[in-house]
Length: 260
Image 1: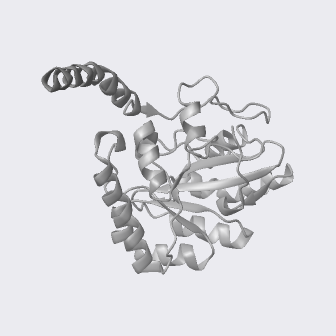
Image 2: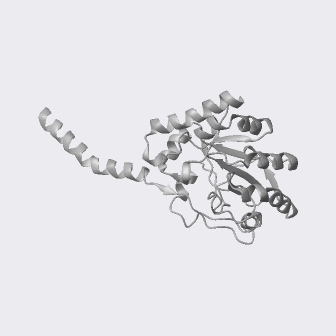
Image 3: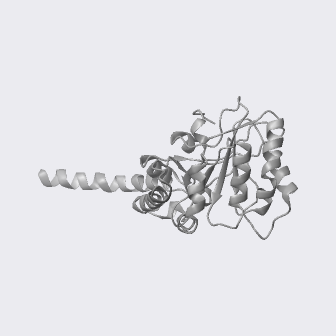
């Protein structure tokens, strides 16, 4: 009788394997963040994307409150191209807060700029140590990638807390969001962006200005790359013109929880 029970248990477990594999595959399905751009001040949208429920489930940030004319300025800093100091100068002069998502390379290469960011009231976020596709590495590797950035930034700047994470290349899965959330991170995506990261395809400050201004909407999370000369040259005008339209720049720490 015991043998029959044992055999039945094995058969039951084997029957569950395909289901377990299916659930694992679903959790590991990679997504590349994308969105429908805002036009005429209307909210940007991810309703048409297949990952909205996953972002909501894990409390990821895509946009702020659509009823308030608040803007959240975010920069990705994978390496330094000579323009971050100018951007910081403008932000300081115009009293605008921002968050800079940095990689391990940036932390090692630009300690003085990191110190300046925190000294001037900006946040530093996690962009991973080596910029991997997070969906292709284990949870243990994710922890290592994030811990190294957090610890090194703390050593350089004294910033002990690191609450925000932007996944490299905007690639994520249900599993990677869950693993990062368990470490205390909130994923930060975006609702305003343009192709600004290619330093060999810069088109002038007005192009950058117009691309950003055309997408502004209440609660917008603006993604910019600090390697772009166009962004650095346009920054002051973008801030001034956004304020003329009644927008106010705020820190991510001031964002109220909003379900997109």
